[in-house]
Length: 72
Image (cartoon, rainbow, N blue to C red; front, side, top):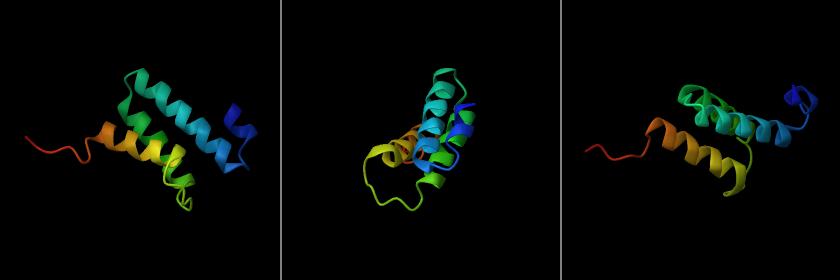
């Protein structure tokens, strides 16, 4: 797997997880996508960048789990 080749470089590992999450979401596996995006957030836990991959992961997890959506 590509992931094993970049295990020491968390930036690339996070990117691999994000791409896998997108594939899982497109395949209809929301739980799998949330798990992968959550992994991205754990890898980027110390990152101070507001945009980029960390932001994309936070938005995806909110969208997939319904967090922040007002109850009607």
